[in-house]
Length: 571
Image (tube, rainbow, N blue to C red; front, side, top):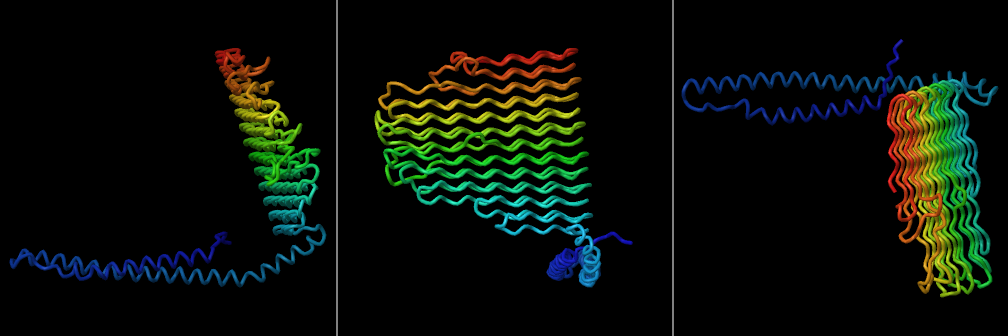
């Protein structure tokens, strides 16, 4: 029995291309016929005549060979064209009986178990949030989940049977905008990706989180924006072999409105949706899925009217998805990145407040590498805090504080043979607003993520750099500013493997605005990772400038049998 599979459409296309080549060659031979067969003698002597005769004889022999080659080429093209026709006819003839056999086998299995023996699962209808159907018990991919209606969750992807990929999760529905005086609706969560087949298959991708709805028009008070929906979880890879699915991205938060009434307060923009975790891989081999990124926090809606109390930017306690773990062999998934906070809105009323900047989202943690072999996933980078709104009514309104930067994600652990993942960078703090009764405080930069450690043989991951601290706002008369009450440190490097491996380098502390000092225990570079028996310790990370109170990180210890200690970081 032959296991060769032909695709008739490709064979027919190849025959057509070959026919075009033959036509081009025939035109070239015809154009060369006269010049090469009628070479005139250079003179009247016998030698010139003999040379002319020799060229002519060669030309005639070439033309005879060209005619034979053209005939063979034409026969070959006809053979390929005929083969494509025969393949197509055989395929068409086999469709009906093979379909009948498939239906005969699938019908009782479908009736008894609710899923076919062979075949793909059905996709969920759009706008319903219905789950995708499961793939066949022996072979088939899971169906994709349907997208959600407004503010509703997307459907989960269907799972595969023995062989096949999991279906993708459906996207969450976007939240509806609020009516006048009403907050926006939250976005729906994305559906979870389906699992891969028992023997082999890829996990499905998690669905996207829906966007948060914008707040309605302000009445006495401003209105809030709806939160973005969370991204769906990535599906697990096949039980034995297969990569985990990607986590879905979180939706953006909806925008808020400020208050145009002196007795009202501004609304708060919606927080972003969390990123979905990446799926774990198959037990024997496969890579963990990457975690999904978060959305961005909502901000404020522009208004033609004077805003007396500003809306606050969105984002609070939002995190990127964690990377999926590998099984025995494979790489850990990367953590998802954090989104940025939304900007705060300015205020112009008497004794009213501008909106504070939203916080940056945290980066997700990297997944662990395969237990026997594999590197840990890198931690996700965090989002930045947003600037606070300004007070525009001299000495009457209060400016908003800058948002906090998010923490960087931790790097995943390496396997018995493998390196730890690098930590993610911390987010930058937002600038404080200024221009009124106060200068608002700056948002602090955030800690860089810890580098992942190796187990037996491998290097530790580097620590993530800390985020820069924002600049405080200035009073409207220039007599003072807000404060810097916290700054960032660098993340520590991961430890090297027990038998062999170098420690990871510590991350650098974030910068501090000129003219300000780092508070106690702040502005410190990350500590370098320690080596095991053999290896060098990681260098310490750079601290903030010594003149601003920064301290370099300590170097890691060298190997107990052989190796040097890491150098301390500069300040």
